[in-house]
Length: 87
Image 1 (cartoon, helix red, strand yellow):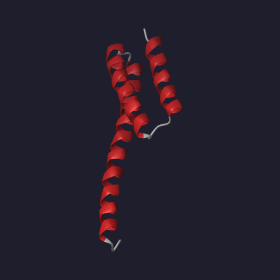
Image 2 (cartoon, one colour):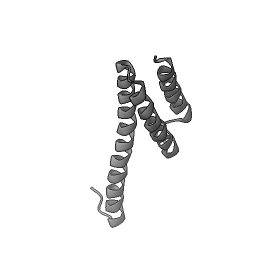
Image 3 (cartoon, one colour):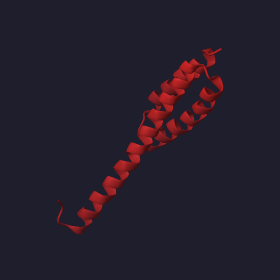
Image 4 (tube, one colour):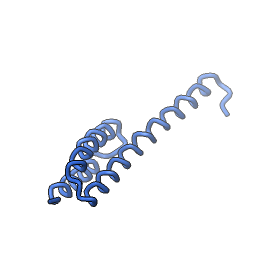
C-alpha cells in the first residue's frame, strides 16, 4: 500500500477507471454475442436493431482505445454480412 497521499488517491482513480473499462469491454462482447444469437435464431429485425447498438458501442470502444480500428471494422463487417445473408 502506498504511504503518500497522492499515491493513495491514484490507487482509487486507477481502480475506478479499471472498473469502467471492464464494463465497456463486457458491454461490447455481450452485444456481439446477443447479435450472433439473434442471427442464429433467424430474427432479422432484432439482429438489425442490436447491430446498430453494436456499431455504436464498438465505435465508442475504438475512441477510448480499447479496440484497434481494424479489429472494430472487421467485427462490424462480419456482423453486417451475417445479417445481410439472412433471409
